[in-house]
Image 1 (cartoon, helix red, strand yellow):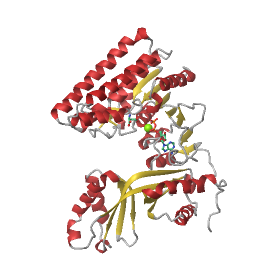
Image 2 (cartoon, rainbow, N blue to C red):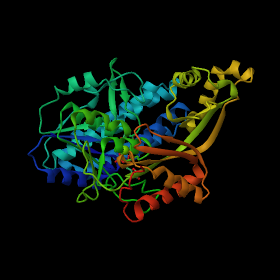
Image 3 (cartoon, rainbow, N blue to C red):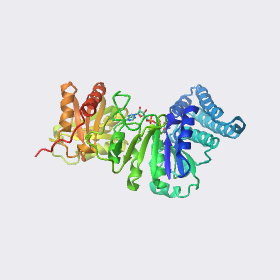
Image 4 (cartoon, rainbow, N blue to C red):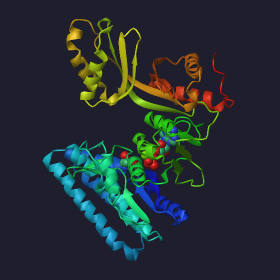
Length: 468
Ligand code: ADP
Ligand code: ASP
Ligand code: MG
């Protein structure tokens, strides 16, 4: 069994879909396959604008709806022989009338719940999968279209739904037995039967759920780059594709910003040791990046550098915190109650301050929550008013080779110091597989490039002798 996921750019237009068809044709028919597709490029963003416009009674939402409909109908015109278009055209038009009704509801009722947002966002993948399935059919790739919502069960956190793995894997055992299944990514259903979505970029995760549920031999994720690069190719022109990574390395790089892979994707693959290959739809001859439990050892100590922007750094400090148990717990609880995700935590050894990194968009909400929790302590001047620094970025060096390898952090810090880049906080994961630094966003681009040059473009590093 092979599971293949094609992202938004891989189904962006008829030319891209033809490319996808030729990749599938080249694979032959020896193995059963599941193809998971994202919405056509930009469509999810347009669907979000659509409900936003409708919610503020902006009637131009109708123009946007028309534009979306044209885009999908045009793809059918170019991919399906004229005599065969009626059925799929009819289905797509019906889906658009349904979407129009939902939008009219939002427009008239002035009400926009997360459930409705998820429902609207789900149309992108519903449409693309229907069109890809029909296009396959007419290019010698008979297939069965399934609706991932019938198999992937989640909670009712509509926009970032948490998957019930047990039920999902059980459901997947009764998928139709076909040599080629086509399924929409991103979308799922709550146990109450409402449409949910798996978070932005979540189609990668859908594919890994299919791979784990069906015990696939391999998962291939196809996008528009030659795999996972040493760093974000948009930030450093010298970035290049990494040949192999361990699951843990890939997960850390993804978590700290390597957008090519949605971070939760790896977890379902680990237990079953299913390898994952990241490939380029527009350069299929390139080997891409192989992610597995046992990558071939390399002398490269740092495998990749990730960067996340739009981070806020929140600091809780005060002499009244020293030796008082439970301060950190109270702070994290206050943040957790607001569902705020924390990217890193550092505590000074004197216990006088705790610093956490979180998304900039949640900064004010976090300050309010922590201020409220410590209101009495602040009034008694035991704790200082919470400080928030923006705009900040996290730059992370990742590599299994850093484990037990002295000197890497030192090299990174002195390099940044030499270039007058101020490091606001440092965190090293307990596994030593990752070192992350927090700095001002205006320095992040330069820092990524300096570190990339230092660790990838100088003479290949030999493991340094351990200090004795
Ligand atoms: P898809 O739509 O196929 O899911 P994405 O846009 O989600 O593709 O991810 C691919 C993009 O991720 C690339 O075009 C690239 O700009 C960006 N990217 C960021 N960091 C990295 C990295 N380390 N390696 C490769 N691509 C990266
Ligand atoms: N279409 C969704 C998004 O844009 C899911 C995905 O592409 O992976 O976030
Ligand atoms: Mg993606």
